[in-house]
Image (cartoon, rainbow, N blue to C red; front, side):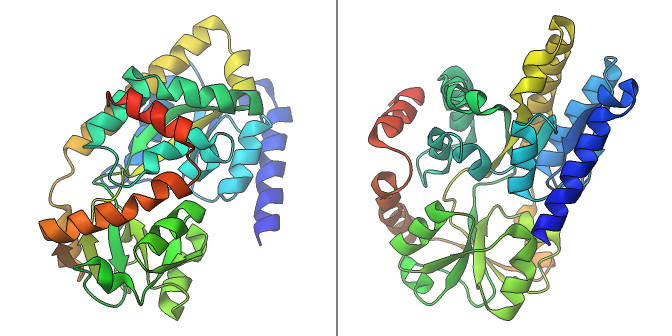
Length: 326
């Protein structure tokens, strides 16, 4: 199935690249979520980006989630210049430059504003792109998804680290597996498209995500518990083909840069309006648990194990510390 999706996505993008001139100039943007301006921060970013391009004389088109393949297929297409822009996971960028994984360090940032400070004022986005652009990929945006990630599961309320012991958590990557192990739990890597089946069959008991996720993706039928652990920023990436970006005329590159700026601002404005999410979860039948200060401190202390055992080197960690002014 994955091979079929990859072939379909590659054939589609190749065909479009070789078609009529008007189509060849169209900027393809691969979405990673439903087209929901109320609940999806990544779609707010992507839609604003596309509409800004169109309003300023550039053809652009949104492609629905999965239409151009899964995460790895889209990353390949971007790096090869077959796809201009993809809304992608942090793992995609991290596979090209592990420095990007600093945004996932649990309890490292005081708030989401500090994430932006490190990226844009502290120069971390530029440093990350120094490692990704030679491989054909430019990160053009970090999209906030909502409140910091918390713990969802199908079994019970989580009030302490000890409650994690008998849970097997869906992991995005090896970093999350390390994090779950630091909490005394276990992790298993499951692709996002397979998550519903994994949760319903017991392959996984839960996942780490921002609170809007089960609402947006229809998981509240089997996800029943959420703990506001506030582990790490909930972000994804907007990645672009470096060949495409560098091949733009000066005028079109200015338009693209302005569209990126507009998309970033729209995403942050959307984020500020995200209120009442816990009430929405409870209305959908998900029990929301707040950690005590003592329990949160224990999660924070246990999580520090991934600072040294994860993919971020000591030198990279120092760079992130400097970027936030520590």
